[in-house]
Amino acid sequence: MVDRLLRGEIALFEIIMRRYNQRLFRVMRAILRNDAETEDALQQAYLSAYAHLNQFAGEARFATWLTRIAINEAYGRVRSAARAAEHERRGETEQMSQMQDKPPTPEDQAAAHEVTALIERACDALPEIYRVVFVLREIEGLSTAETGAAIGLSQDAVKVRLHRARAMLREQLAEPIAGQVSDAFHFAGTRCDRVVAAVLARIGPSSGR
Image 1: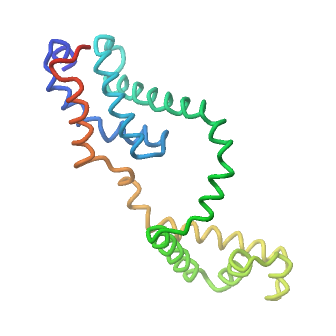
Image 2 (image 1 turned 45 degrees about the horizontal axis):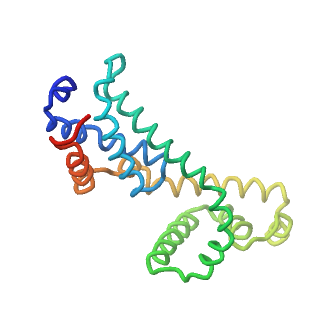
């Protein structure tokens, strides 16, 4: 397929993009942590790969070669952002102040409510001996000594029960999302079509490698 691309069959590049879009998006998204930035970086990675197809020597799998280009593009953007970090730090205090003054949006409130409800349900599922300690220590903010005095336990017993409560909560909170992890950062449909169309428009017949 690479040989045919080098001979001018540009349409084959769409097959390559659709085959690797999701893999590259996910790995680049893990580095950049921003959907829009990752989508833009993915397009640039494909353009770089297309421009350097004649450098693919076949010593590694094509998928590996393409993934390395994508990773390099993502890290290049991270380095560029790091060079601007000093400027960002100077405005950090002002930005934080503005964020604190900004009222939460309905979306923020809905997300916070959903997370709170999830935590409350997980807490309710704890056995009472652990639930009471967790509520007093983590929700009410009592010290270990205060919690022990309130329910007639030694401080060591409070620590043990709190540790177990946290472990149980981690399991409770993990179950609702465990089956959905593989669906995270899904890349298909209109997003996939958008990247393919943008790249093909830039490497059309009139463009050179």
